[in-house]
Length: 113
Length: 112
Length: 238
Ligand code: SF4
Ligand code: SF4
Ligand code: FES
Image (tube, rainbow over all chains, first blue to last red; front, top):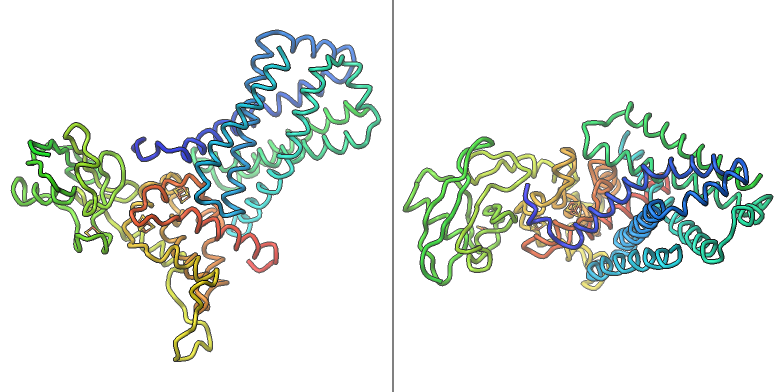
């Protein structure tokens, strides 16, 4: 097993896609459950939203939004390769995905803090 | 699962991906809107309660997410763990159903 | 470049070890030259493969400093690090001895992927006329220069993770035949390349395309198969 043969943009894009996908899959049930429980009463939703004002919780949320944006951008890249037959554009596609997820994360960061 | 089944799973993964791509954008946009305008819990619920469009949106969103995560987890399990075969498929299906149910619960919570 | 190269070479089969040799460096020298020097002057028991020495036969591939390459056309000066080379047998294939791997399974997968040309019924004895600029002809042309070296197969993670996976070279071959208007086995071939052992297992990591010495793009060929098989499934024809 050698890392040198895997050290290229498309491989990193794959690794990031898998990691973000796994973390999102783990987070998804928690997110649904917490929201579903909070919503049962308006007061509890307010409590939930206040709880999510904690800096640490906020940071975790920003992390999740970045994961989501990264997984989304990486997924669009995959769809382009598989359905549009992208070849030469691949490097551009990787760069665009990275840029897009970074931008979304930043926008979210600016808006919540 | 045979070649035909795997092909359908692959298609399902791409179809849900397209649904999710749009849904995630809408979700993030509303989230940023709500945070920027400092919407309170009451204000959020006032906009979603009794709104069939939002209910439909979140039901579709949660279902697509559960299916997409299920197929993805199945692939990761098959490639990176010794887990494959009918038993593992069933477990992933069960997990996806639970995630979908939790999502629906939250969506109905916003609605009613 | 003059002086001495320090070359670590894998000796043994699955179990074995790296043995270090000192080889005189030369101005123009391929990795295969280095291996041949070791075998001829330092240790005649070293096993490795080559035939054409000009990049046509596909028999000389090895792992060079961790990257799969055709050794007859890889210049030492491009790949040596501080005058060092580490040579191992290709990954993802059983080692027979030293630098020689068992390629049987690799080629068996070409057969399983429907890699043999099957003349379409009614083809006739005359030459088929295929317009050079027809899209199918161009898609086939993009993939037919494969020399069967196994570099892509050694570079692919899915091959490592899923022993049934047909691999980039076999799937690339299937795609060229699918685009050959003279071939008559298209439908059966789509069945052979669909699913978890076939094109749908590929994650578009593109290590295959990056390392292929012929600059082929198996990822693009596999994407073509994904679309063709998915269409067939939607039509109920898979
Ligand atoms: S693109 Fe597909 S076949 Fe090529 S190395 Fe990646 S996973 Fe393997
Ligand atoms: S596709 Fe390229 S790397 Fe793979 S066997 Fe053919 S020539 Fe070698
Ligand atoms: S010896 Fe034939 S390709 Fe290298």
